[in-house]
Image (tube, rainbow, N blue to C red; front, side, top):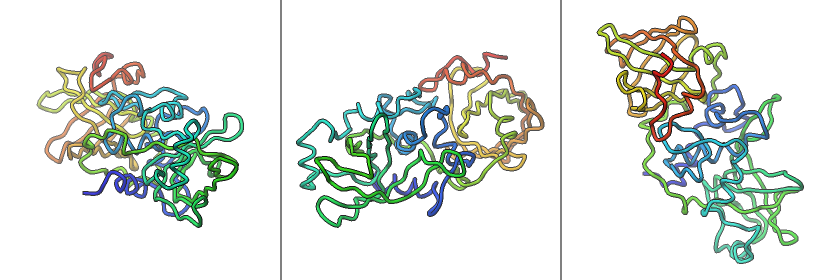
Length: 320
């Protein structure tokens, strides 16, 4: 089994192209940065997505809304969550850490997130994918992954190289200096919930905005035998379901992938379903090629969809 650090690198490489950019409008990017509301840039969303995907459920760290966990999203809190966490290795306020970094006693390793700062409020964060190639003890280059870039006029991310050099008492990356890094060894990770990440296969694909908008929301599903349950499709291609008689309790989560006029649902426990929306409020589907169902959209109420915490919420059937 790969180490956590190997997992972080493999995850990034499975979503990002080897060359060029992953952009807003592509399934992978919009999943990684799903909580982005348009303010600032998307740089802070990448590390939280990686760590959540790997099994971190530390609500004091992960700034990402995942309704089957205790993790919530707060706008503008990406940097502060990271910088204030006890896993953050401070260079900005610790002379001892600077000396240890100079002596190579401590250093960022693959999967760690480095935070840098420039003049004013110019902060940025990226994830290192290796331990660096060092020309001298004070100058080297990391292979990194980062979002918060611009490509074709939209938010984007890529795999690139960043050079660092110790100058004037600071570790400089371009015109910005390192504040420190978040050390994965100091973060608690539980077992990742995903049986197989099928979304990565479609990371660079795009989907019609009309289909995405048509699918998002809460659907009441019913089989020909009369069995009822609910599906909650969130932005960022996450989906959750609840029993008809227990609409306040999430049973399982997964991913939904839009393709042409069809949606494929890959559940975290390995189940697969197909859905064919016929309008903004009606759809048919099939579960694991075993039985058919029909669905009616009952709500797009954000209050309901963002009420879930540790799998419990207002209830998917509240709007029925």
